[in-house]
Image (cartoon, rainbow, N blue to C red; front, side, top):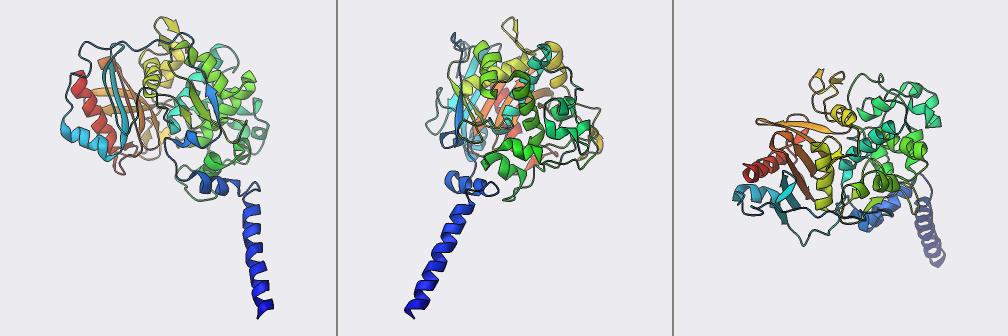
Length: 385
């Protein structure tokens, strides 16, 4: 009996040690990280490895509108914000802050991670790289920058295809499995390897399918083109030039690793609004053209030459990593991230809206937009009218 107990104990310990050891090997590291870090949240930057995105040496505090915080938003709309654990809601008009409210002890200095809203920043950096001739053109093959794209049909994929999410690669955004590309990409420690392993499964440049892998490809292109880290590029080329007040951070795949370009930039709510104004002002910041206007015009317009498989019509909701959302009489463009990270530009109102938080509605309005997003736009209109 003692021998049996001893053998059982050794066997149990062996299983524990084997399981622990496996979580330190490449196919399983992401499981260890998931156990340590938990489910995704806007405060993940506190636990993941990060790199600083330096703010401007000449910060430009937002001027307050003469009617700052004088509007009362209807209680049913406030209830919606609180139902989905909103942490920040800001409305700007004519370059002035008109409404600002925080919840859960968030304030003007609290960082909040963007999830996929960072995709739009990558797009802005691509526009700058094109202008600086670091990238030769929208139809330049990705293979010029990433060796694994020179074979297997991936040699047909261009920068434009990745900007418009029409690469045809087999990154499936809806897959939430433990061995999905989403899991490896967010919790793993070598995002470049994940990209190298992708295969072509659909015709290139024909159909829109939202996939974070396309944005990560753009991030790798930018790294190669400039021989710089994404956080440093974002700081040098944009963040320092638009009056940002607080250092931000970008989450990495491992300590001293590379930025997860498809997500994970974390500034303050007020600094998010600066990117909203770059949308509104077509890449211009108070007279200085940060991103070429021609590029921003294309980026903020639907890539209607692509098919939208959800409507079987020409694509109307997506440009170059930016969303296009109609609401009532408004046409809005936006940066959007998981759990309802939303930065809108509303040209007809000369306005920008920022909503950050922990949750979003499960229901959709149409095939792409969450139901609560329309409630936030409605609340903004109460401030803007």
